Length: 224
Image 1 (cartoon, rainbow, N blue to C red):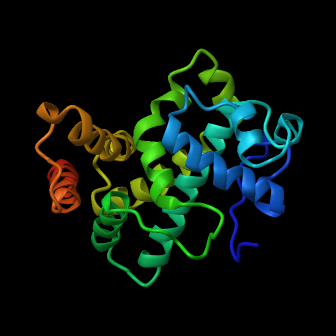
Image 2 (image 1 turned 180 degrees about the vertical axis):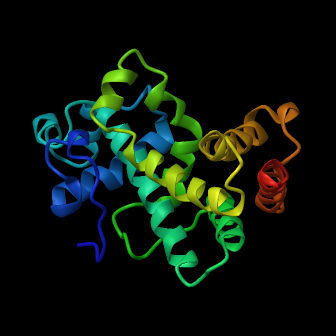
């Protein structure tokens, strides 16, 4: 069982998978399978076969695979906010907090032993590849009313508040940070698949280049 868990919106699931062995197995293996197959080819039937269980048992946790994807990506945003809190709690300067948050958003993701049922490296690849599928849907407004994007909004709010502390007259803190969060994933995707759309590249310095680009974009935008 994990030493830590996050309180996600209850509308994301029928039963929170973080708190049972089967639920953790569903999460662990679904991350592996979506990373390997892609979201379109992933099904609850395939997942049930992989975990040696039944589709009915999976449906006790999630209404459908779209809710499962929303859960996984919501968990990812909560995990990022947790890590940002971890590394900024001792800081007092909002500029340093902002720089640190950009670094954590962009840095290469590694396995976090505090959550032994999720491969954060594979989950990050899922966020890069599948993020748009969570909100570019016909039901986005109803999903939003249910609070299914709360993790993303909470992270935006936290970082936007530091921008407002640095420059209270800057009018677009939420727009800037939501753009940074989305761009941080798009640029990695472009580097891997559409390289003519980015200068990041595929070399070992890609995350540092992306951090420098986004830090420059943010601080030049908010300077008085």
